[in-house]
Length: 301
Image 1 (tube, rainbow, N blue to C red):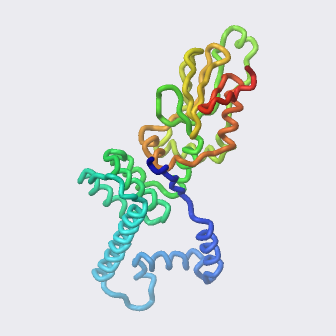
Image 2 (cartoon, rainbow, N blue to C red):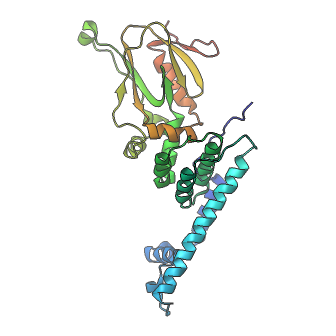
């Protein structure tokens, strides 16, 4: 039996956050000011010559020193990713990825500094050895430009994702409506909607993912969901079958883009229990829901 994939948590470990916080309090007061902070940054990246009072080496030497330091950091990044990949391997049957893919992978991965993001890139490399073609160059290029905050927003969105019908693309279901007949036009039903911001995916995060091209900008509406046969609806790790209680039922949702769906497969193993329960309670108002273990979720049938 294949070992179940563990999620890559795009976060700073609590102990490391505490150490960083303690270190910040211990910094010299001058360093907390903008000038002191800039000097520290410039010194780390070897571009502080004009901020120093003592005579410095000539420009050519300073440039060479900086380039050497950059290359050393990039080498350290790649070696760390390779080490993480090796730790994740269990001697499964593997192949050598496409040479062009590997060249592009290393070219992009050398600039990945954070531990959590390096773990994610290690997972990508291992997956590509096991299943060549799993991650496109386009997805790699976008991932290389993403900050840790953006990757965390994607992970939060993945924790709320679901699929339904025959389409396997991940979606964020926000509610449903009944087709407007004459009675509904005269006496409109209240909206059946959820607010994603209540479940750790703020409107700002949603807009951020849209700007990155990971989620489509428009909230979509499904086609009419037929009474028979029941429609498959997979919410996080649970498979349900939905049967509308009324004719003309449709779902509202945001759809992941092809690249967003591709990256979601790398980070989307976490679940949000409160959102799961909220979606089930909401859909139970308009659908009969049977889970894959035989339970009936609907309370209005």
